[in-house]
Every structure is written in structure tokens, then in C-alpha cells.
Image (cartoon, rainbow, N blue to C red):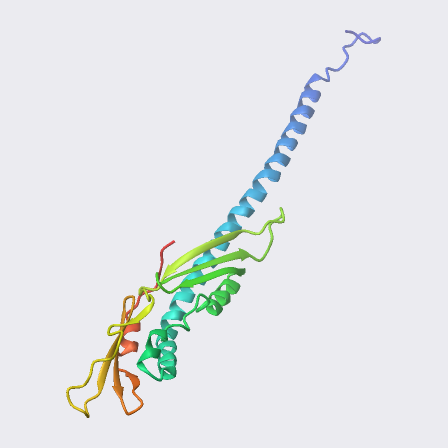
Amino acid sequence: MRTAAGGRRPDDSGQLTIGLVTVVMVGLLFLAVSYFLPLGEATDQKASSRAAADAAALAAAEQIQNDLASAVLDAVDQARTVEDLPGVLDSLTGGFGREQAGEYADRNGADLVGYQYTRASGRIWAQVRHRQPASTGDRAQSSATAELGIRLGVCRLAEPDEPDQPDEPDEPGTAEVLCGDLELQFEITGDDGKPSLKTDLDDLFDDLEPRLIS
């Protein structure tokens, strides 16, 4: 088509095409940022929460290893007779080691929201939640399990009725308590029959090697 001056009207189709392409590219870029940015953020937070859970579970297992001997000795001190010995591990409840787990979760930017030490299996389970919410408002959550290296089941006397009787009147009696993988040897002395622990707990528990299993 010619103009009044006899020339041609400028062709705007090229400019229109460039404009449409620009709009489409901007839109796609916006969609990509909207999708991939939260996805990447969520992935980072999940990895961070997993690291916090691992640290919490393993730290608790190592703390239990360090405190195990003193906890047993404290319980033994409370035992007045042989009949009290099956309760020497009663203080090792499901919350044993929780304080250390919470501390290490906090160091890694997370809150400890679940914890369980299971004496019979020797396993420590910790669950944490990332403290900083993602842009979506969600907070990543992870759990981990560590193994202490020794299973402490229900304690029982190897001789349920009476401790071994001495051959001589002045010779002390003995008793053995079985707690899963743990065997505790006691000597019974004095007129009151108070048990005295003979097993070296420090050497026994120092050889443990706590580790993450999941």
C-alpha cells in the first residue's frame, strides 16, 4: 500500500513480533523463577534439616555412651538388696540423651520436635524441624536414627531366688544381673547383704562406637 506521497507505509509486523517474543520470554522467566526458586529453597532446607537430625541423633548417642556408666553406678548405689538389682537401668528412660539432641539441633538451625531412646534396641531416634520457614511458609522436617552399639533389655537376676551362697561363712556371695547385652557381676557383702558392683563399666562402655544407621 502506498502513502499519499507515493511511498510505502512502514511495516510494523517485525516490531510486533519482537514485542510478542519479549512478553512471552518475560512470562516464562517469571514462571520459572516462581517455580524453581521455592523448589530450590525447599531442597536446601530439607538438606539442612536432615543434617540437623543426623547431628542430633548422633550427639545423643555419644552423650548416652558418656553418661551410661555414671547412670548405672548411681542406680547401683540405690540398691539395698539383691532384689533391687533388676531395676538398675530403670533411670534410662526414653528421654535419656534428649538434652544433647536438642542442643545439636539448635546449633544447626532447627528445633527438636521428637525424640526417643529405646533401651532394648540401643537406638536413638530424633526428629527436627527447620527453624526458618521457606517462602511458602513451610518448615522442612527430617528424622534420623543412631545406634548406641549395645542393647540393654529388661534386667533379670541370673539366679532369681538367691545369690550364690558362699562356701565359707566369711566368703562374700555373688550375683549376676543380665540386661540384654550387658552382664553385671555383683559381690554381696556385710550383714545387710548390700550388693557391690564388680564389673568395670568404664572399659565396657568406652569401647562402644555410636553410629548413624538411617
